[in-house]
Length: 255
Ligand code: OOG
Ligand code: MG
Image (cartoon, rainbow, N blue to C red; front, side):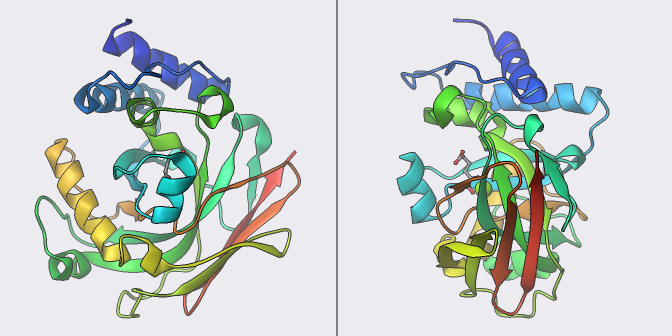
């Protein structure tokens, strides 16, 4: 099997050129340590091209996502500024292999948050919360992957859209939400689907990032994970999230 460096180049190149690749570990033989090492090296390539690290995304934090993808371990990925799609703006279909969208909740931090923290400590580090959409795009053919595959591929991170920021004083433990495509509701859920409370996702992000030697920083965004299954998106569509109390966010998928 190719080494970690070569595999990092392979997944980075697939993301950069939006070209599907074969699974790198279809039998799930690789250790998760190696899979995260590939992810880390692939992100270093992006940083070397001038992208800036701006946060963390969590994955498989809801049962709907675990069931849809057939994996049940919480994973995480690294977010860069190049992945941010402006709210109400345009994403370009050509930048993706086969994009899907999922409704999430985003946190922005006002303090660093590292290691084993309580939910109360995590909340005290939150500057604001917002409804968000993640655009996921597995670089593997047919969006099919093993757990090491998806971890190496930066947990399918490719884009995210963030709506209006609100104070974290709002009780966000169980906010109703919908994901719509061209104004038609395609997914219905609640923030409670995210580990029972989205703060648990932030607690996990603090632990996992610190363990990787990259603790959560003030100003970073943490995407809590899809609250529902993800939906395929096609060119020309308008994708939006509406969240109880927090408002809405959307983007156009360009041709
Ligand atoms: C992996 C990423 C999972 C989430 O929110 O659960 C994820 C995938 O489904 O491709 O982003
Ligand atoms: Mg997600």
